[in-house]
Length: 225
Image (cartoon, rainbow, N blue to C red; front, top):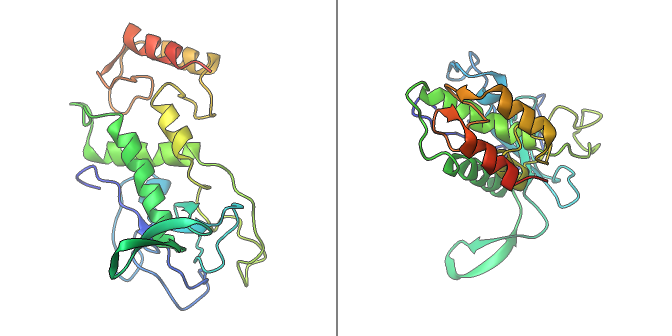
């Protein structure tokens, strides 16, 4: 993170939660907590690493771990196709938080690719990480709360900020400034409010030029809807 790189970690596949003695590292790491007493200068969600797995009904995958410190959830069951170990010429249907982490990491890469000029002179590397993870969290879909996070009565608050939505996350870079899944008048007003120099991480600065100008205005209009 000190180099501007988003770090995520698979939550683990033992169907256990915070109350269990089993802990999957580094997904369960909390700043200032053993085993490594690490620190994090980002906002709270930017410090979280863990990724949980959900199925195609947006319900926690049966074996996915769950934890209040997890950052996000992503597809990890029922039709995830991947290369088979020790069979490089074949593929198979897999399940696991490793696959969910790949979806979340890919979403982070899509967001980062929209801003090749980062870091700007006014930014520090941690700004990049914080904004990318905020985009992922803001654009995530709220998911159905399943009831199988035993012994907890539900999975509320244990599967991160929601299920990643890569399309919605990428749309933020096209002008969806308020991350509501559409580009409209609210986004236009937010862009106009930042007209001119826009330092640091600045969503209305769609071309990452350090200024909100007519170029950003036209980009937003071209993606309207």
